[in-house]
Length: 174
Image (cartoon, rainbow, N blue to C red; front, top):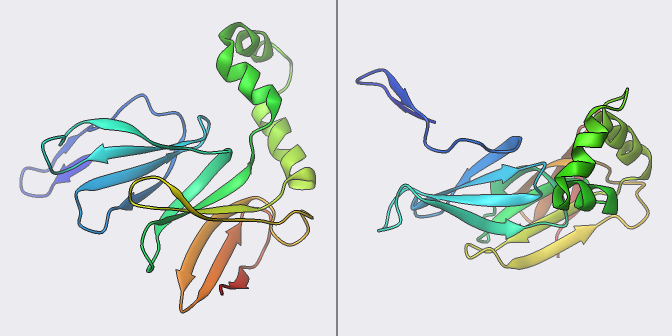
C-alpha cells in the first residue's frame, strides 16, 4: 500500500499476496521486495524505471521466508522459518489436495508450525540485487537456529531472531 500524507489517500499497489511477511527497499530505491511466506518466494515490485507499477517473482526459495533485510555488503538477507516439505509442494501443485486438507478437523499450517519447532532447521540466505544466491547458512543439527524470522548483518556479525527463541543469536561472519 502507498499512503499520500497530503491527500491522506491510501492506494493498494499489489493485492492477492499469500501471507506477505517482510519488505525491503533496493539500494537505489527502484524496487521493493516482499517476502511471500506461503508461496516460498520473494516478489519484486518496481517503483521506478519503465517497469514501474509491475511485479515479478524475484526469487523462489527452498522454504518459508519470514523477513527480508538489506545487507550492508549488498543484496538482501532472508530469514527462512523452515524448509518446504513435500506435502506443501503437493498442496501448492494440486489444489484438490488443499481442498481436502481444508475440511480436516485441524489447522494444517498450525500443525506444520509445531512440527517445524521440533524438526525445523534455521536457514538464512543472502540474495543479490538480481535475485541470485550469494550466501546460504543452515543449521544442519537444528539445535542452534530454529524457525529463523530475522537476519540483520552489522559489523561482520549476523544477528538472528527466531519466533521460538526468547533471545537473538549471533553468528560471526568470516
